[in-house]
Length: 619
Image (cartoon, rainbow, N blue to C red):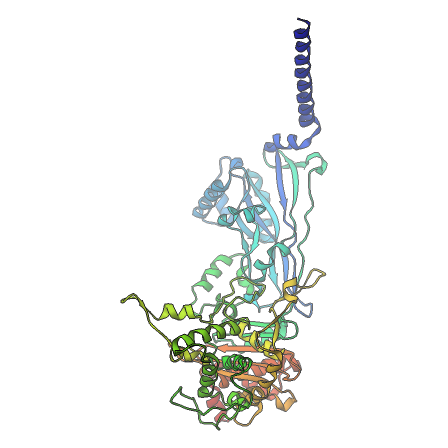
């Protein structure tokens, strides 16, 4: 019995200890810890998210491109709205009642207790006109924030734009920290560097009465947190060169990409047609966006990153390097200009070596160069030999950053296409008979002259020339040279080498110089010899089954100490030497000399508006 009596006291003691623990915890929660007081008092508190200043954006010369400007959003907490006089409210804000009803419905769908935007991008005069009347509309309040403003009318495709976060975004865990009405980078650098630019949000808790009038901070701001401004971006872009490139392609469709070969820094990024980035900010931005979206010239289309073209004759340089690496040709190898193999576009001297072949862009020569690289007797029949050789060829070509995303600091980059054996198996599969057709070099020879299935972007084309300029390596092209007080991201500081020996690249340079400065070279209209600048380049005319051919030209300069590599695509403009080449020459002159000689400025009109050849002969 005494044993049982002892157990009774033990159990009672345990219950007493547990009760004391609960009482202590309850006292702590209700009296000492204001967090629970805060949760209990939400009906009399406002939780205000403090949006930090978004980081600014500067060009390579530290000139500001993108800044912040104050705007105001009218927010609503649906639960707090009482007996709304919608007619007076809409008259005050000058909005249709249908718009108000739709906004209120969307706000209720998101949350009855959290604020949602009703009218955004109010200016200071707009705010002054309505602020005194808001006391008559419980549940509505003004929220200040910063919006983007621009010091440039250029570079819209690279900068991208900022817009209000959508309900679809808010449902994703990635955007859990955002609230309705907040801005987020939608495209371009604004999107890619969103976490860098956005900074860190702060929170303030304020006491309010039933009319929504502030009564001071909760617990003297004990639970408030400060916002931290986003970091600034310092771009690689040369603003003057960018503006000049956009001027040259005004009224055209195409792209210009210029890269500093030794660093991979993008100097100019022109997508034409272009538009003023300010069109996508402020009041009416949504309507202006829809107008751009429905424009048949597709000004929103980011051509340097998203438009894939056949590279034309510029691709012959890559095929020559592959053949040199495989040892099937030497710099002194010559081939007959055999028109039975593939048509050559013009009469020229016999391609007795690689320099002449590059200068004259001889199609039959490069047909035979690639054939030698692919058909190397590695299998007893031409079909298997082609398969083995093409697979090896594709692997080497892709080492130039082709057929894959380069990894530039911008989303929506296209891969282009370097076709594989699997690609041709699929292409030549007979679906009707359900059997594989055999294919040989004669089915893929168009790759030798940069036509057929091969596709590259403007950025990739410029990077090819940067790689040749560096004699076999490249840095991933990038737009940002500094974040805050630091440098670019680590992935943009790593060298990438091709599968071709660096010692072989030098054999292409003399022929590329002859393209521009040699007598009868196909790119003579890009020559800057009169200024003592040697340009190494290659023209291209890209066949277009949907209309006039596209013109392309790619180059770097000075040839022996390259400071700029450039690729120009001008759609439906014909021969590359008559429009793309002079455009590249003007851009190189602008960058290396700081200005374009007065007597050459009339060439700008020829690039922008018409057939250069006709105007040249009319001089």
